[in-house]
Length: 165
Image (cartoon, rainbow, N blue to C red; front, side):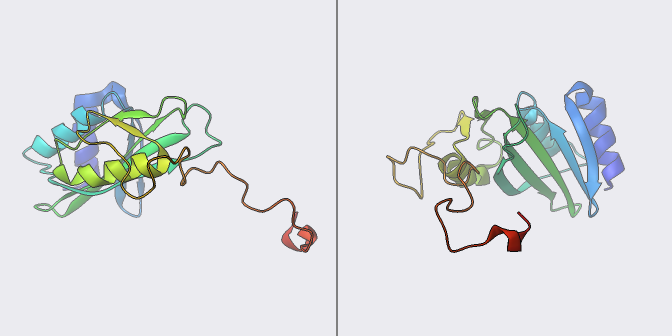
C-alpha cells in the first residue's frame, strides 16, 4: 500500500471533500470537512484494498489564530494487514464545536471522543454517552484550549528583555 494509491482512491470517491493533502515523514495527511469524515472513514475501513481496520489515535486540536477553524479533530488510522497508516484532520469553528461520532465505526473511539469532549469541549454528535470522564462535571471551561495567558502579568521579579520581549 502506498500513499499515492490511498490518495487516488480518496480523490476518486470524495473529490470535492478532500480539502488538502500532504506527506509528513512518509505518512499521508488529508484534511477534510466534518460533513464527510464519517463517510471517508467508513470507505477506508470497507475498501478491500485499503483494509484500514484500526483506529490508532483520535485527538483534539486547538489553533486559536485560525479564525473559523480554531478547533479540530485528528484521526490516525492503521491497516494491520497492509501495515499502512493514514491521518485525517477536520477543522471547525470554536463557536460550533460539533463533529460526528465515529464510535459506531471503531468502538475504540468511545473513550477518546469523551476525553476530547472533556478537555476541548468538542461535541461528538451521535455519541451514546458523551460526558466528562476526568474533570469535574461543573467545570465551565475546556482546560486544553489555549484560552489563557501563558504567564502571570502581575509578576515583577522577571525582566522580559532576557527573553526577547
